Image (tube, rainbow, N blue to C red; front, side):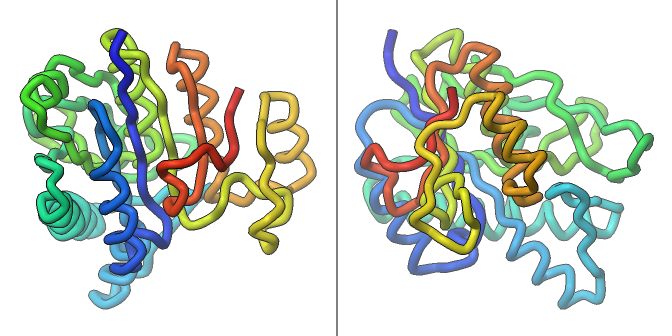
Length: 255
């Protein structure tokens, strides 16, 4: 079975043009088929504040009212997505930018308003692997943002780590799939202020221990939850690592 890498980039890397360019240059050199999923929360938050809208986050997830949805759609599916695609073209990687609505690639359902009303936030219902396979078979790398749709004409904001995990799970029926979650840290850290305190491997008991001890910050919780969900659903390997290390074996492996 052919190997596929589903790589998610986010955190402050997206917000740093030099770091993003360096990452994409390395990404373009990765052989074989690959899919890139991206976030962009820092840029979206800055844009919201410039418009007088205060961003609201609960457990690392963005509360998305109607005004916020307009902004994050413009930022994720437009500004960030097309800049990434243009940069990949510069480095010889033929890419196509997608939201979940494009080619009906990802269908989500609006999250229930209880116990927390997140607004126009979606939970993934279905990833259409065949839609991605059309691009991969043509030698085109899909670049996927975190905006999906509900099949009824409504766009929904979905956590980018969840999107990456869901895509990896769906593609594991066609490929030997590896999920790589990249950001500005060297992996999952014992001490968030010490970049060298990387935890090389995390299983579920250690994850629960780290949570109970308060050693996992809010932004890392969705990443780890999605990583374990992916492993449970058949993804062969999940790694959380620094975007600078995309072509080496450093980082935290989830088992």
